Length: 359
Image (cartoon, rainbow, N blue to C red):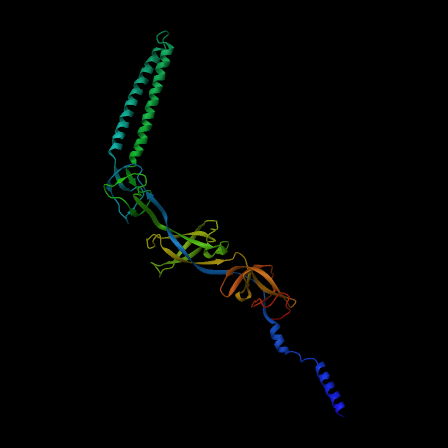
């Protein structure tokens, strides 16, 4: 009897061991392998950003003395508004005045000598028409003398003209309309030495140049309205329109950006050259591209990718980032419209994983 009970007990244990383990909870398995997706579509990518900019004068020149001398008269000071051709200062250089007078006398002497040679040549030439009166060699000598005196007169005239131009440098004039922003001289100052500071600095601020370094990602896009909107610390309550007029057409290696230059009207002089500005710009992509939720893009140390689902099998597709639009991201890669993409990308879904999709 005990033997039969033993055999029965062993058989029960063997029978229990051969029964398969109960299957996992199907609901939990379905949740684990299900991934939310969307269908990839083309869209118009755009991005508004704020960048720092610098306001520069439309024109800026350092005015220096081309001749040595002492400032005899000073007509302007810092902040003076001047017009083109206006006299800013007068230099006193007596030696130049003396040289000008000397050159004038030399011109008069050379002119008189030339006229005398010309008159003598004309009389000799008239006399030579009679046979045997004037030897041909004498006529040629007189002619050569007249030509030499003519050359001396022209040389003296040109030298005097050059010296007169030097004399003109004694008067310092404004090359264009603008404002004197710096003055480094006083009445009586000696000027004209090498290494001297400029006499004045003149700026034209009726139009200002706004320079902005545009990140490389935006350099090939379209700027909406071809303009931007700027504010400055001195005028924080005013939004001023700036029109794009030129680009540098080169990417700076240090900053990975391209300099764009805008023009800002400043007829009233409210804006100051040298100020920094915050510039609001809106960029548009020239043609439609793929735009996905920002969560769909996975960024690792090695690459960026999204998870594409094809025939319920996950794939990693490398992408290049375009405009970052906050909760959305423009991407480029080996993709096509209506591809099924995971809304939330993660490295946990390895390539080749079988998943169930949910829209």
